[in-house]
Image 1 (cartoon, one colour):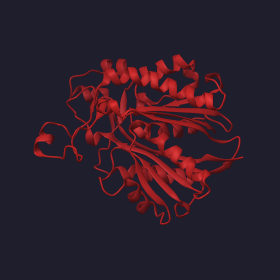
Image 2 (cartoon, rainbow, N blue to C red):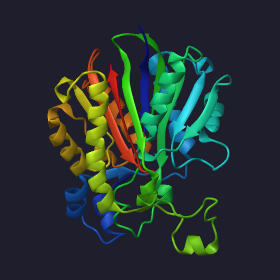
Image 3 (tube, one colour):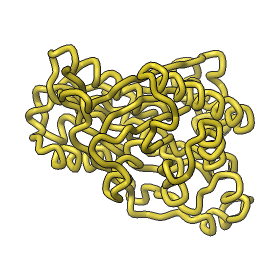
Image 4 (tube, rainbow, N blue to C red):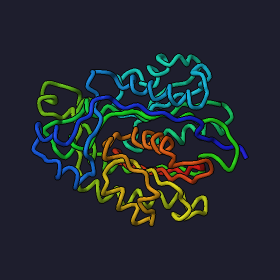
Length: 326
């Protein structure tokens, strides 16, 4: 049976490392406070003034190389991000130009931390339609550009990076098996940048009031995230008549170590079957799952035939999960 498979993968991180000790010097926090509440010790931050597309292209080239596909063979590019190079045009188009992929469609998806899984489902449907052969999916964020460095509830969490995968046609049993996407706009204000759009355009007042920076209701989001990630994970497993015991590797969005641990306990998936890199990488939003997948593959945590569960929760609010037979 024809399926959509992940044929290549790559990632890219900025070279600058921002440690908890560094943050102690600029905001009222401590290494112990950050570690006990998030699990993060350090994160990567762009220190060279580079745009999002730079890291997206670097990750994409590595994914293309691993799939042995030339950029000219790409039929579609989907960039999942909430921190684009510009509001217009889509960063996907800028990536297309930099890669040299003249025949591909290119656009962005804004679904917060769930964006990569949203884009993965788009790629799956495109490939299974038969109209697209090679689809490049990128999860990329430069959240440091929208950080309020006086707000210790957000600046200690978010970070920068990019991950990319190539989705092509394959054959069962390999493939993207089941995906579930959800959202609830009633909680849109839980994670948001209040100003800078058409609802509240950028002005001197919005900038001075720090309204063009990320705001998050951390406690409310924490509780909903655990329940939502568990539910959507069980949903995709049930579609394939599988249980958490059938999962070889759980690769969650690296939002918060306490969330990851709580979801794992509820699903009955132990640390030995869960991939975690938040300690070194931080929360890179839409980039976190593809970055983690790339690291997991390079570390030998995934092998052909493994059942891999991906799950995320983010701004929107959105939550999503995908089950992949590697």
